[in-house]
Image (cartoon, rainbow, N blue to C red; front, side, top):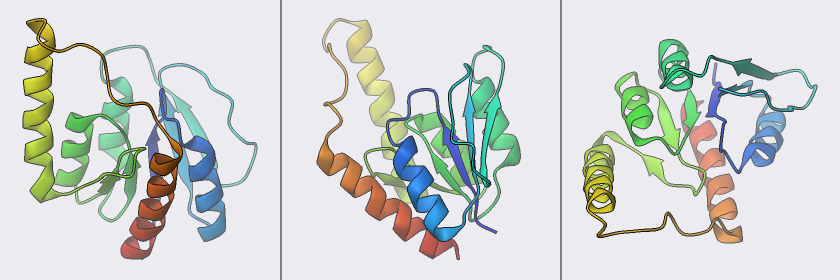
Length: 147
């Protein structure tokens, strides 16, 4: 059975996930280090883990299975979930695959080094309507692919 796990601490598309999951009757588990309000609806579960480094990631990796979906911006978490056969999408609608994850990990490392040496500042582009729309389409596609 398909299940959606959400690395929820800074996820900007939680409401969209709830809507899509309800439409397809897919359970959702949000995992975060700090408490957050979630809808009091069947099929939506919130798990608060400790504040330790990567506790939410570790919790997700321990439980995710083949053909389940993980929503995260965390590239190393995405890589671990792909190794277990899960499908992974970020909130901007980028679907990670075995073929693309190596490039994403390398790009992440290069960016970290550039920031460390003061050669790059700032963060990702602001989250917009097209990102939200792309995410909704990709999540819908992934649910169909898992079924």
